[in-house]
Image (tube, rainbow, N blue to C red; front, side, top):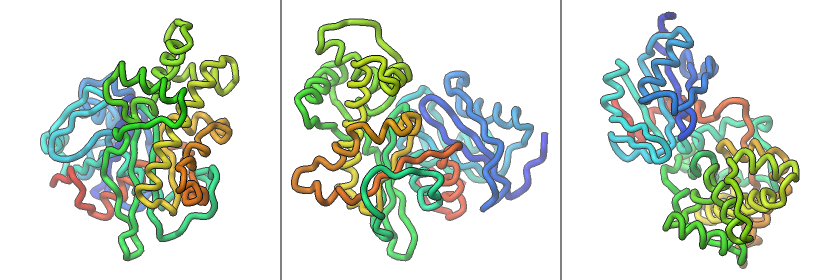
Length: 331
């Protein structure tokens, strides 16, 4: 294996389905040797880390930053949408690291937003962003991540660490209300994540089958989305439209809460795959549909993040570079 230079760091973006790893030779260096490993194929996160090093013929560096789809509020991590659980301190010792930084994945993604260029995003509605205003971030994948950036008053940014995806979702139409009523019967509390994630799209489709009294087989989220994009199935089209409307409701709530006149960014693994179809969905209308505050939301730009590799790597590296004292920092 290649000996790791003293400045090298291992970067990870761990979601409920996949764990993505990358290598950075030092601060400001290129992100390289990106590898995606299915979480289900590894008993523990440590196993996935060691497999990455084997497959890239590298030795363990001194520093590692892990962006993970989970709250990071102490030493113990137990993933919401996967079975991995670990102690940060124990993992640091097991891997022989000098420094291990663990942050929420959307906190890391938020840190990367100022580094994104025009080629890394496309705009859906709104006008130009206000340069010193708060920025919102939301994104559906296996779950629903929510974060943002607040100006620190010194030309920099403070990332938000929260779990806004688990806030309660409310309907704006009778059809949305009927779907959410079924989701409430099935799950109890209906958070935004219950509807706006991969499983959420599956559940919306199933709810429409139930409401229309047309039972059938359950379709995976990717099949629902593909059939909707290519207009092959009317129920799939309605399901995906509802999904986008619910995302718009949640994103509009976030914009109002943060005063995100610096823009709202959409990350996660689902929306970029919808391509420009997303622009014709009900998302933007639902984003702005806030009654007396529709005029407040209308100029706020929404950006869909569309990059070949996870921008969370940049955020994880930024966290190491800036020595941010975020929850989960272990030395």
